[in-house]
Every structure is written in structure tokens, then in C-alpha cells.
Length: 326
Ligand SMILES: NC(=O)c1ccc[n+]([C@@H]2O[C@H](COP(=O)([O-])OP(=O)(O)OC[C@H]3O[C@@H](n4cnc5c(N)ncnc54)[C@H](OP(=O)(O)O)[C@@H]3O)[C@@H](O)[C@H]2O)c1
Ligand SMILES: *[C@@H]1O[C@H](CO)[C@@H](O)[C@H](O)[C@H]1NC(C)=O
Ligand SMILES: *[C@@H]1O[C@H](CO)[C@@H](O)[C@H](O)[C@H]1NC(C)=O
Ligand SMILES: *[C@@H]1O[C@H](CO)[C@@H](O)[C@H](O)[C@H]1NC(C)=O
Image 1: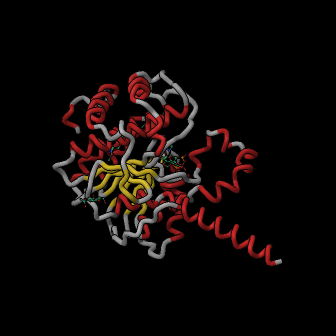
Image 2: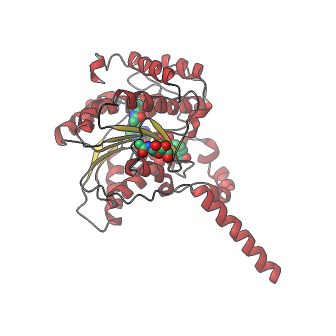
Image 3: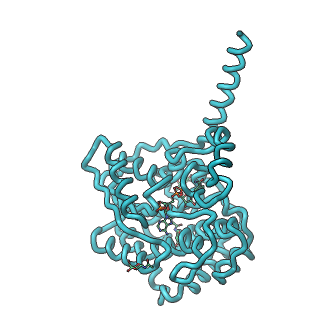
């Protein structure tokens, strides 16, 4: 009997400690965002949706940029149902990052309808997506996670510059550490150069950290600060194409462990939230668990960041006629 109770207590405390440990950092900033406009890409699900709720609770006006407007409207209904203040403004707008015309159209709408934007959260992303090219001719993971956000960010820069102290946050991932410079350049130069699902994802995320660095330099004399955030390991739909997790039987086997060590979307949103709220105005940095940490050596290299920025402009040359757009 006593053994049983002692056993339960020990197992319980170990589980509790593990859950607390893997839940990661929590954002304790109490800053209000009343009326400030924040754009979140991929806000229909997962981390984006959880983040949207946190921001709405702090008074922000939200633009949910979704490829599936229906799903976006459902997210809006859910968020409003959780809020005490029903006057929070939430706009759902169509944005398909795999379609550059759609990105341009989305940005034009925002430029017409808003006079300034406080925050842009480049959150939408795919993982382990089957290989393929978008209608614009770029590899799907690279365009969704990186190139699409590159174009979007540049089209919204003027609105961001009008805000007193704007912030751009790119959702990166620890996966950025797993790719080398050769893969990075090869995969970016040639859209048919598909090495593996992991390389495709890692490259897109390393690219985001490099861009954070280069863009922060280009914007150093403006009010806009730019950082990237790693949400950690979060239970979301991002794994829909990843066989070990999309297969229900394999998933069921891992479920007990995942309950302990994988974050909820709300927990996953904490680091991004921290980037948007912190009074620390350092720019061009990488945050993980609500703290500034060092990205991989490649991602921290200024020379590579500059070269990679030029390479991106080169492959997107049809969409960027002059450097003056930066
Ligand atoms: N979950 C993790 O463990 C983890 C770890 C590290 C980094 N991250 C990063 O966190 C971010 C959010 O992911 P999540 O885990 O919340 O995944 P998620 O639940 O799958 O959410 C991804 C969002 O991106 C949207 N999206 C995908 N392709 C798009 C496109 N072409 N145009 C516009 N929107 C598109 C999705 O729209 P639909 O709803 O229409 O599909 C969805 O709203 C991603 O950048 C991901 O790489 C996640
Ligand atoms: C791309 O977006 C444009 C502008 O919204 C739209 O007219 C076009 O039909 C879209 N193309 C595809 C293939 O989705
Ligand atoms: C975010 O990534 C985009 C490319 O996807 C890049 O253009 C932009 O400079 C990055 N912004 C920040 C704040 O890192
Ligand atoms: C931000 O925080 C870092 C690490 O805690 C610190 O070194 C840095 O001086 C701070 N920067 C600003 C601008 O507050």
C-alpha cells in the first residue's frame, strides 16, 4: 500500500518536472498593445492561432493572413469567443505564400487599408512537404517558409516604418542548425535541387535567420527591429506530411512521451510573444525559450548573410527590379 503511494508520488513528480522542463519559457511581459496592428501569416492553426489569441487579449488589432479564408474565419470566431473584450478588431485576409501574385495583392490591400503596422509575424510554414514547384517556379518549402515571406516583408516595410517602433519576427527553428553552407546555396540557386525533406526545411529556416541579420542591418537607421524566434517542439498540424507522426498507429505509440515533452501551441507561442513585447530593443537576434541565444555559426556570419541576401534578390529578380525597394 505505502509502496504504491510512494511510487505514484515519485512517478507524478518526475512527470511534472518533465512537463515543466519541456514547456519552456513563459513570456511575463505585461505590455499592452491596444489598437496596434499585427499581421500574422498562417494564423489559421497551431502557433499562429495561439499567438493571435494572446495578442488579442493584450488589445492588438489583428490581421490573420490565411490561405484558407474559411479556416481563418473559424480561428477568428474561436479567438473572439475566448475574449472578454468583444470590440477587438480581427481581419481575415487571403494570402497564399505559394503564389507571388497573391502576396502582392495581399500587401496592396494592406497598404490601402492601414496607415501603419506595428508587427509582422512571418509564421506560416510547411515541414516535410512533398517535393514540388510552385506556379512561380520555386521549390514549395523554400517559397512558403522563406521566399514568400521575403517578398511580403519588403512589400510591408513602408507600413512598418510608419509605426513608432515596429517589429518583424520570423519563425525559425532549431532545424536551421542542421544544414551546411553548400546545401544552402545549391538548394537556393537551383529549385530542382531537392536533397531531402529535412534539408529543404533546414535551408528555409537557416535562410530566415540569415535574413533577420541582413535586414536588421539595412534597417538599422529606422525604427523597425527584426528578430527570429524558435518556438521549440510544438504539437501542431505542421507534422501532417511527416509519416512517423501522420500515421495514427505510430502517433499513438509516441503519444505518452509526446504528452510530456512536446509543447502546446500556447506554450509554443511564448517566445514569439516575448519578441513582440520585450522592452529589449536589440535587433537581428535569435530567440529561444524567451531568451536571446546564439544561432548556428553559419547563421551568425555577417558575410554569409550579406551574400545570401544578394543571392535571394538574384533568384527573385523578376519580382525585384531595383534595390531601392529594400
Ligand atoms: N511545431 C513545431 O514543433 C515547430 C518547431 C519549430 C518551428 N516551427 C515553425 O512554427 C511555424 C508555425 O507552425 P505550426 O507548428 O503552428 O504549424 P501549423 O499548425 O501547420 O501552422 C502552419 C500555418 O501555415 C499556413 N500555411 C502553410 N502553407 C501556407 C501558404 N502557402 N500560404 C499561407 N499560409 C500557409 C497553414 O495554413 P493551413 O491552416 O491552411 O494549412 C497554417 O496556418 C512554422 O513556421 C514552423 O516552421 C514549428
Ligand atoms: C494567384 O493569386 C492571384 C491573385 O490573388 C489569383 O488571381 C490567381 O488565381 C492565383 N493563382 C493560383 C494558381 O492560385
Ligand atoms: C524575415 O524573413 C524574410 C524572408 O523570408 C526576410 O525578407 C526578412 O528580412 C526577415 N525579417 C526578419 C525580421 O528577420
Ligand atoms: C538585451 O538583452 C541582452 C541579453 O540579456 C543584453 O546583453 C543587451 O544589452 C540588451 N539590449 C538592449 C538594447 O536592451
